[in-house]
Image (cartoon, rainbow, N blue to C red; front, side):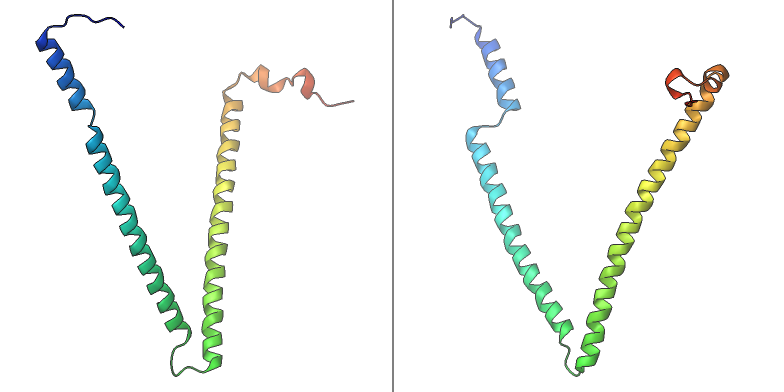
Length: 131
């Protein structure tokens, strides 16, 4: 590596350009610490929220004053709602696939319409029916 004499103003301009573009190692470490703290805080909040959800589910499942028959019907209703949601999602996915296929079909039809008539009416050698 060779050393070259560089004017002080140019050296200072280059250093300030690098300093403005890149952060220092200490700042980078602080950013990592801050991000880690946020992740740990979010993890604690998630654990708290999951505990709250479980507590509410348990409270709904065993409501005081309900007979076992009413609790069973509530559980059946909950299961049916879950099944309905699952079926709705599966139906939406199947319908999405159907619509995508319909778009492909119409694109193929438009492509065939845009071809010259002689190319459409005359089948290629490999598409001719077997005799």
